Image (cartoon, rainbow, N blue to C red; front, top):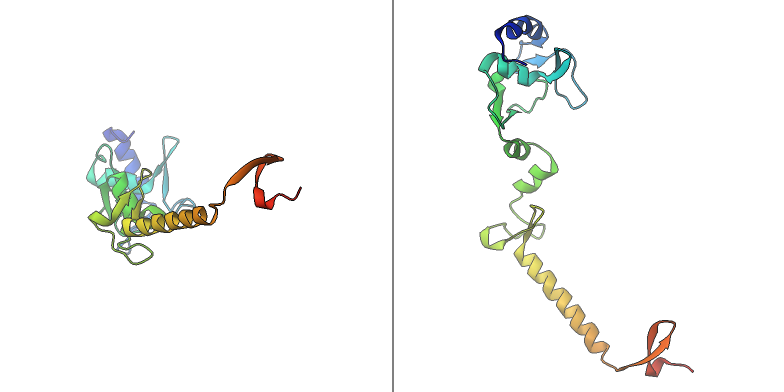
Amino acid sequence: MLNDTETLLRLTGRFWAKVDRSGACWLWTAHVGEDGYGTFSLDGHHQRAHRIAWVLLRGPIPEGLQIDHLCRVRACVNPDHLEPVTQRENILRGEGISALCARRTHCPQGHEYTGHNIIHRRDGGRECRLCDNAGQRRRHQARKLARDQDSRPIRPRDRGGLFIRAADSSS
């Protein structure tokens, strides 16, 4: 779409007419979506304005990379504020739940997330090994206590599908 010179020349004047370059961030003044990113119509297709700015001033976006706003201003199209990064890097730099969790250095109980103290979950999350071990000990003790308190023999007298203790039967 942005590969031929004719398209780029036709596009350049129209594109830059919609940019306010008066500050450090070059703000997109045309349509900005609900997500805060500028959009630009090119041959009937809506494109992100910051991606068009990158292509116009820096060339093609490398395969498999996304354009990240270093300034965190989504309407900014200044290529000095943009950088091609992987999707993972883009997400981790953001303010979403994945980024916030990844930046945590300690569990809610204050234990440091270090190599020997991390349990990596299948869903990509992590848990504190010390807290997990303490929880397993609590569950084990609770089961043991329940088993010790429940050590009276059960006589299999069926009362509606339930087994009743011999001492509890009233008839």
